[in-house]
Amino acid sequence: MKPRILIIEDNEQNLYLITFILEKHGYQVIQARNGQEGIETAKRDRPTLILLDIQLPGMDGYAVARALRSNASLDQVPIVAVTSYAMAGDRERGVEAGCTGYIEKPINPDTFMAEVEQHLLPVVPTTETPDEADE
Ligand code: MN
Image (tube, rainbow, N blue to C red; front, side, top):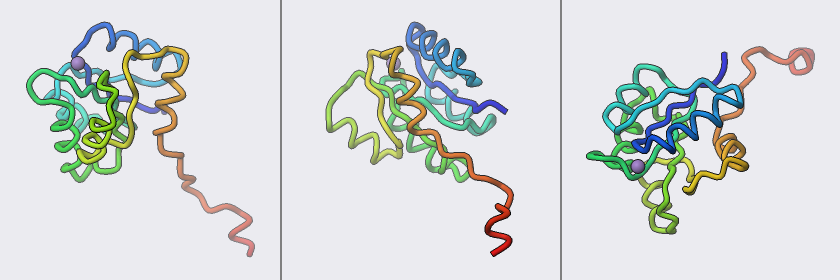
């Protein structure tokens, strides 16, 4: 099954652009337009990775990240903050809130996919390898 990526983003242009890039690369996309909706969707749909806008109406991205991390079923999912606040302090705040990484806006369509994929967890093989079994 294709990895599912949840985008939590209130800006329609960014949402459209990010969705377009991810779908073009074969990812399944789930959208949420505010933090509360994003948290509920994440609990229900268990995405492979979450792209989280920091500037959201109401609950900001830091609060959303903390809420996601406090949920036992979501404490391992990579959360990548997406924000135009390209400042070191914001990066640190994001990490403290539980974000795995950081992508700066404006979105660069040429590099965005590679930046996202850096944060996807490697697929863990579920079967024992024959080499190990023989030794
Ligand atoms: Mn926003």
